[in-house]
Image (tube, rainbow, N blue to C red; front, top):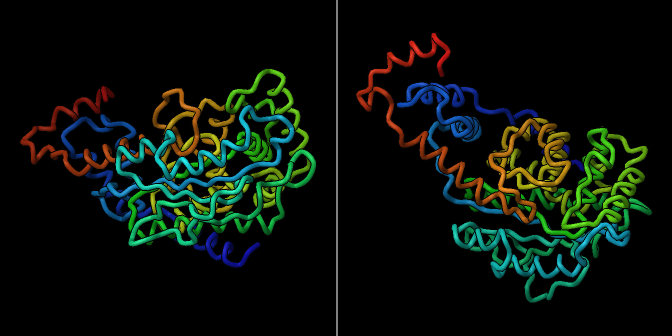
Length: 376
């Protein structure tokens, strides 16, 4: 294993626990806010988790970003995707123009994007590239060039990448998290762009969780029945003999540059102690990879939407993280992250702004009776 990666994993396990003093203080405040205990449900859980991350009971999550990893996947040669690989190129460029789903939301809400090319097959014009991830205290608005190759190799016929390539992509994700930290963002989300990456995600998930292709494979962007059956068959064949304990080996054999980089970004979030939002299926699988490499990394993860992809809940259940909403979304890109940011902001607003019973001159004795009768 790369020495730097080992240092990061060791640091997450040594220092990646939630601040229990802050957690207890946040729980205590929730107990005395002018509401029945637990009345705000998941919003209360979010505020307590944030306290454990930041060490502060009251938090602001105003400065937000979404990191998007773009790459192509050689397995599309097998006919497992309904869209051509030219879409990866077009959408990677369109993120910077705010023409896509996530980027249009980001523009509206004032959320910054960091778009990273880790291996788009078709050439992006050199004029759109930059080498640095930050500029003047913010994430760059252009495309960061971290190309490893012109897409991965076809996992149905050979390993998608070498372990060295997987590690390189993973460390790109750590670099992105550091850029987020250096620019002072309060929270970020992790998305992707890459035709064929529901197949790579299904392979990685099945290998890590001991599932079959039938368990984890969905229709992606819109496969017909024949394409779906072939996709399932490819996943089952590709994961044969893989060791679920060897996460890097699984990623190298059947993953994608985007998933590897996203895994690194989740690890970086834990290493730099930044709250991070999981998007949909591909993002959830990358989060699971990070968790398997460093279990404490899950302490920094927050949910967003429930993906329609079949394997999504398997990944989230393995993580122990729940989605916050279900709007029937299946776009990817990080499109669930802006919505989740607003939910998390709402949790902060309630924790920060609600009066306590004492401040509101409310006699809370009635709540004690309710608790005795198990009414709340």
